[in-house]
Length: 114
Length: 115
Image (cartoon, rainbow over all chains, first blue to last red; front, side, top):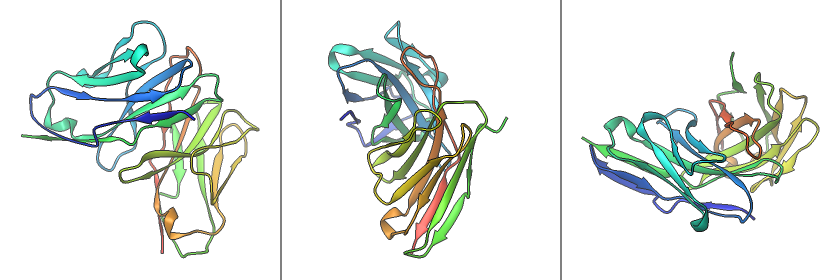
């Protein structure tokens, strides 16, 4: 069965620090990959997505992610975080050809301190 | 254009009671999903429907049933609620597929407490 692993469950950073959140998945076939963000009390919103082409994808609010197929990874990065980035971040994998099953990781709670 | 609409937003049930969570989307999407969100466990897929007329089990289907009433609506039913079903439930819809530059859109969530 496909699975998605997010290794960092809680991350605390100071403003202007760089961010990298790990995401690995277990599936050998073709996948579409996503990062979603959930601000306190809100529903999930898309940060960025990979479906084909350039493995380095850029999203909203200065976030980017790199798809490394050989490592089954899709890590999220931001060069300089802001207090407003405090939120929970979820990696998700769509198994293409698998009935459109969309599986999420357990999430990473990011707290950015002033 | 409302996107994905879930009702109710909040609900308190007694153990053993039944209820149906409603979800409707107005984006003409083929696929719809129900997730539950629990602290430290992320979003876990309960059931999904790749297209009208089909439904499939996700990771945690026990204690739930679903109905894809039509292309717009996908309901989740708890036949006999248990305290372990206390959670926040999210509905989502999409036209995801291989090579498709799309995303899943989420409803605002239903906070369910079973006492």
